[in-house]
Length: 511
Ligand SMILES: [Zn+2]
Image (tube, rainbow, N blue to C red; front, side, top):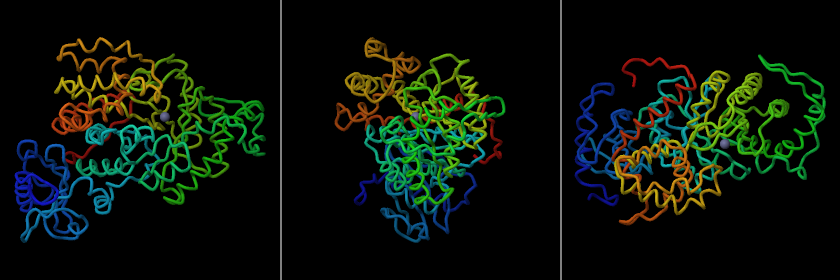
C-alpha cells in the first residue's frame, strides 16, 4: 500500500511504467496494451496530453483512477496522491474526486444542451458503469446521447446523488475518449425544488413531470383569452387535421391549466441557471392514467409558444402500454395513428416527441422511427441494468441467485413504485433452474420485470461475505467490463437499428 488512499503498490508500479512508455510517444501513435496485470488495466482511448501532462484512466479491481504524469497546468487542477516523484512525477486521483477537474480541463466531458437538429437517445445508468457500452452503440448513428439520466425515484432507490450520476457520465466520456457531447437529464421532476436541486447538481436537460398538477382544478389559473380564441380553428399538419372545439379547450384547461405555474417557474429556474438556450426542457405526461389526446398536445404546444417557453420535447402518454423492460403492449395500428398525429404536432412546433420507457419496444420501433424518426427523443434506463444482471447470470451463478432472492424479498415493496404486470407467482420456479440456463431468464418478460423494478432492494441487500449485493455486482461488472460493454453495444444497436435511425459516417481510425 502507498499513502493514505490505499492504492496497491503493484498497481502503482504498473501505472508508472505505463506513464513512462507514453512519455516517449505522441497521442495518436500506437499505445501500450490495455492490460497492466491481474485485475488492472488502463484505457488507451482516454489518453490526452495537456501542456506536457499525460492524462489517462486506469482501473485496479473495482477502483478507477485518473493518472497524471508530468507536472504541468493539468497537474495542478487535481488533488490526488503523488505516487512517483522525480522530473516526470505521477499522480493518482480517485475517480470520485476527478469529475469537476475533468469537466474544467476537457469541456466535452461536461454535459451540454443537445443539438436541435438531431434525434436523441437517453441512456439511464443506475450503476454508473453502462456508459462505455452506450457510447459504443450510439457512435454508429446520427443521434445525440443523454447520459446522466436519472429520476428522483431512481436516485432514491440507488442511494446516489445527481452529482455522482453526472460525475460517472463525465468519467466514462473521458475513459471512452468521446468528443461529441452529451446531455444530462434530471428526469421526471415534479416540483420546482427538485428542478432547482438538479440544475445545481449539473443537469442540462430538465424533464418536468406534470402528474402532481394535472387536473387540480382548485389551483387552476383563469383561462387565457388567446386560448379561448382557438375555438373553432382547424389545425392541419403534414398529414393530420384537428378541429379545436370549445369543449376541447375547456377540458384542456381544466387538466393542464393547473400545471402552467409549475412550468413557468421551472422555465425561469432553467434560464437563471443556464441562460437562454443553455438547457433542454421536456414536458412529460407519460405517467398519467389517461392517453394524451393529440388536441391536448396541440393546445399545450400553442400555450407554451404564446408564453415564450421553448421546449425540447413533449412526452405524451400513448395508447397501449409502455411497460418497463418489455415490448409494447397494445394495438400497433392505433399506436401508429396516434404517433403520426403527435409527430406532426411536434414537427410543426419544432420540438421532439419524447418516448419514455422506450427500451425493448421492438414491435413499436419501426413505426416510431417511420413517423417521427427525425424528431425522436427516446428514453431507456432499466434495460441497461438488466444487461448488467445478465452478465452476472453468465459469470457468477451464486451471486445471481443471491440477487434473485433479494429481488423476491423486496418485490412487494418495489411494486409500489412501478406499474408492471408481473406477479411474484410467475417467477417462483426460477430457483430450480440449472446454472447454464440462468442467462435465458433475462429473455423472458416476467423475470425481466421482476429484476427490473427491484434494483433498489437488490443493491442494498447485505452480501454473504460482508458489504452489499451492490458492491458484489459492481465488482463483477468491473471484472467483466468488456463483456458488459459488448452486451450493451449489441442491445442498443438493435434499438437504434429497429428505429431506423441513420448511420453515422466515421473517419476511419477515429474510434
Ligand atoms: Zn416517463
